[in-house]
Image (cartoon, rainbow, N blue to C red; front, side, top):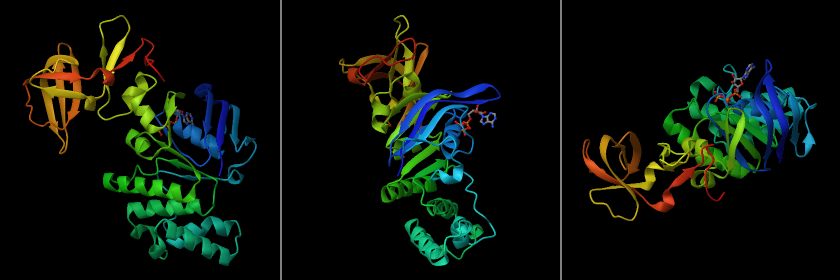
Amino acid sequence: MASIEFVKVTKSFDKHDVIKDLDLKIEDGKFTVLVGPSGCGKTTLLRMIAGIDPQTSGSVLINGKDVTKIPPGQRGVAMVFQNYAIYPTMSVRENIEFGLKNNKVPKAERTGLVESISATVGLSEYLDRKPSTLSGGQRQRVALARAMVKQPSVFLMDEPLSNLDAKLRVQMRIELIELHKKLGTTFVYVTHDQVEAMSMADTIVLMNKGLIQQEAPPEIMYRKPSNMFAAEFIGVPPMNIDDLGVAGIKFGFRPESAVLSNEPSGQHFSIRGVIATREMLGSETVYQVKYKNSSYMIKCIQDNFTVDQDVYLEVAANKMFFFESDGNRIGEE
Ligand code: ATP
């Protein structure tokens, strides 16, 4: 197992700083998810840990040791990519065994490892098949097994599920959580999908433009976003944020925190707006409510409101968020 630390790390491409003075500690044995919009620097961080593309300045430490001069193959890390890089002409067994053969691991040991690892990821019965005869999820498991066979102390995963369809992604998310529990190894997982981050992470590291916006467990990220960026990034639909009419201060509330009704209860933040759109999702309905020049997204179980209908929109005081003009949330951490 291994902890990872970035100390004042800067990474530049063509004199442009993509990551600047970044400090970050990734805990030993935890499932850490790096999340943020496209281009914010997630993959760049992962590649620096792997040693594929080293930092411009600062240090990367694995288990407290500066690994700047240690080549990728000797860092004890394994990487799983989005386009899982498995060899189409080799069988599943040969694919998994490949790295071991290269490292001249004796045959008996190789066979034992391949068998135990393929059992862990549910591939035992597919060992003699070619990748082209496997489903997307099974191929993804081959890629995982290829990484696992190296017995790394850190797993780096770069959007490994993005080529899978929605249903399979949900299933593989659960499998990865279970795999992490089984192995107890440090996982660092990159995604731009906040739902993946929320469902899998012990710790989410939320990034924007090369800077860390917040580092917290999913529940804290949702309940106590440190700023407007975090508030809007986590949650679907995103938090409603609007001007309060007070200099510089904004307010926000989550779509699922509002209640729609025909009669106001009088105890809450309350406005009388009109339903502009209605989207029935099954167990929930998403409405867009217009009020003066603003519009708010509301997600609730009530499905009986119709477009153009006047409604009261209410939010309990303890469900409201407030933000300073610099975007930071006002209130306890
Ligand atoms: P995505 O979710 O789209 O994969 P990301 O958060 O992983 O994005 P990175 O791939 O880390 O983002 O890229 C961060 C920034 O660095 C981007 O602006 C990208 O264009 C730039 N960048 C990455 N690699 C290089 C390179 N080899 N040369 C020049 N610029 C690069």
